[in-house]
Length: 348
Image (cartoon, rainbow, N blue to C red; front, side, top):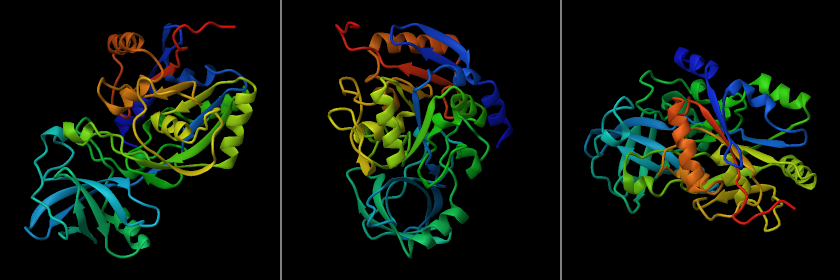
């Protein structure tokens, strides 16, 4: 773990936003004390792939960077949705990166030990469908040997893969870290267990957070597969039966649980695809609160928060985050946003 990241975690802050608009600025270490016995915390245990691959466009000999951005189909495990950049690296801001050379269907890419073929260009010159040559095992070996974590200019030092794995990381299916889970540590999990607060996991293939292009960014998040175990569904059902809260660690957990929700709020176990955006007006059937990072207006993560609270409360929270100097990157500070009751709601 890079030294700066270790220091950031030790000093991390947590803004708690209650349903009535009350806000508290706390050390994030207090997370273990905030929930009630019977509440259930659900986190994303996806491990992060080394999804940034530098290489050469063989038709013209120019250097490129491919960022894997989505799984296309479980039946085609070596085919991906990908974003392509020209030469350069993460030290240049994503929006300032050079464009890639013109690509066409059938073009071949040499990405370290891996060879890939452009299957088709989608409806944007930097958005493509990519297929690796060889087996799934060979692809993963090549990613492990040559790939790097996707990262951005706010962290200039190259990240190692373990820098973007949370403490609960399991299956490597995410393209960027489910970063809200960086808030979790063993002390917090132990505190929840002592206080009879439930903890469960699901696996959601968290996608990229920025493409550097406004038109592409407006499409985020892309469709993302998830898996919800039977035991997690059983824990959700028990908490709901008792009237306890369901707290999602990160927007990816919100997407998975709400995508798997039935109209009555029960959750389906198994595999699924989270499609579309959760935004203002989207009914939330399962999740009562979300622990998330600090997001900006217009980002897909911020849009999801509009399903939890109205714009006035989110604006007040943003003002408080700025006033307290909260850090907005994936290794930064956190906000716990409790869902507001709907308009005209009265407690029985």
